[in-house]
Length: 212
Image 1 (cartoon, rainbow, N blue to C red):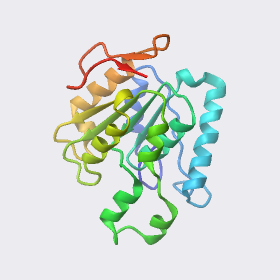
Image 2: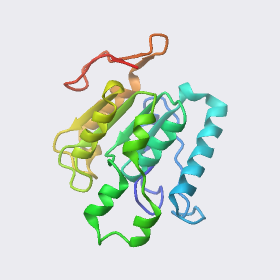
Image 3: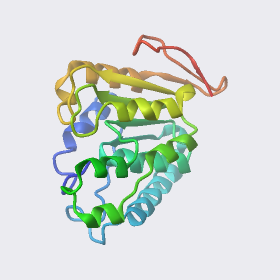
């Protein structure tokens, strides 16, 4: 789930982090964005997202699906993970709630966005049952790092916060550390029988085995 741009154009570079590790990537362009028709609304986008998830699930199953959301898309990704049981959820530069971000930039954001989008990530994330990995730059000026810190406190027992020191909102992919940590996450083994996620190599100071 991509961030707040006019379309998915320009996000192809992000897919490389997954394809080079053996994953296929499916990326939706939100209704009202790019060539996608329809009226922009939170309800409509979430309905589209759930339809797409069900379609992918029918072919591959939950245990083969990783839900990834960046920036604005992190909220949609969180809701879809809460409604389903994917293998894992990865949030890149997420927000505690869209309203928190919107209030910070009012009156710079259009009023129609404030009325149409609430995206309560902090509530949805508490219903996610799969492992959650949160990646965030410590110098993010658009969505401050503290948003991810607060999110992780809500789901500490099945989540990990991967900090990119010095990273801002739109330059994380310029840091080798970002690619290294994401690769480690994708390479991890989900111990379904034991209901544990085992981290074989250090990813963060809080590295440990999480129990679900």
